[in-house]
Structures are given as C-alpha cells and as structure tokens.
Amino acid sequence: MLGLIAFGRSVGKSRGGYKWAKRNLWRGTTLSAANDEADPLEMLQRGKIPVRRGNQALASLDVLGSEEHKMNIDSYNAQGFVINGLHARGPQIVLPTSAYYWNIASSDEITFDSLRVLSMIYPRVEILLLGTGEHMLYLPTKELRLFQEAGIAVENMATWHAAGTFNFLNQEDRRIAAALLPTSW
Image 1 (cartoon, one colour):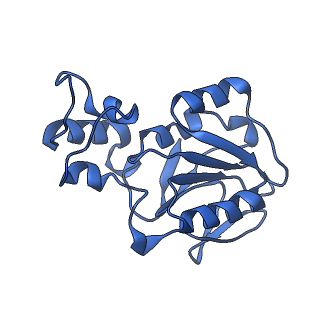
Image 2 (cartoon, rainbow, N blue to C red; image 1 turned 90 degrees about the vertical axis):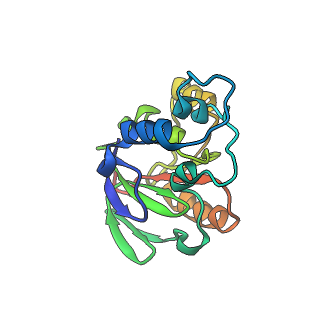
Image 3 (cartoon, rainbow, N blue to C red; image 1 turned 45 degrees about the vertical axis):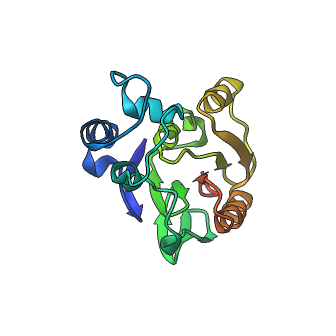
C-alpha cells in the first residue's frame, strides 16, 4: 500500500484514503448515474459515471491533471530517485503531478493489491509502467489479469527504461503511472 506522500497533492492516507474519498464523494457530489442507490466511487472506478460540468468533488480527486506541477524523474540510483529535484529513497509510485512512497520490501511484493490505489484514481490511469529494478521481471498472469479487469495496461521494464518512458509520456499528457523499484532491490 502507499505510505506517506513524498511530494505533490494528497488524497491518500493523510485523510483516511478510500473511506474518506468514498464518504465525501457520496455526500457532496452531483453525479449522474442510472441507479441512485449505487456506490458512486465504485461506479466511478468502473467508468460508469458521466461527470457533470463543474463537479468540484471529482475535480479535487484529479491527481493526473494540472499542467503546472508535472513530475519529472531526473535520475535514479541503487537507493532511490531524484524526482523534480527532490531525493526520494526507496520504491516510488509516480503520477503525472505527484509522487508517493511505495511500501514494499522486495520485487516479490509487486501485486495488484500493492498497487490497488491506481484503480481508484480519477481520472483512470491507462498505463502502468512497472520498473522492476536492474532487470525486467514479469508479473504472474493472475496479477496481469486483475490489472486488465481494472482497465490498466501494464508495461514491465527495467527501472531506467520505465523512468525515461514515464517522462516522455507525461510530457504528452497521457494518463500514466510509474511504479518504480530502485536498482538495488
């Protein structure tokens, strides 16, 4: 799961994470959905809710937008990364406008559950670049199927390649995320 925020905006643990988002989406938003009894966050995750103009509650959850604070992975080493000039030790999840510490101890812990938050982000992440350290490692087919069901394409690659690809796609305003392990992990 995600740890504390490293930089950027937060809709994570500091406010109660999923429960906070679910409670606040349910209370104060104007969502157009066919079934008023349905859970809006669950419908949003499945892409079933058309968002009306001016919906500030959903706009506040937009962690992929905002031109002014784009993330750039400047460099990496065996212990971590330099993201927008700031040193971040350990594994990181990098979104277009924010970066988070990814609390895993080894590449064996890379699962859909450890990255589940990516399926809850609005707007939906389309591509996950999975940087697995010095060499490319593959996820089990079962895990890849879970990402596919969530509508997220996973690209496995070495960390150096994932960092460069993230920077390139982020400049093109793609809805991406990078889950990166330092090269010593």
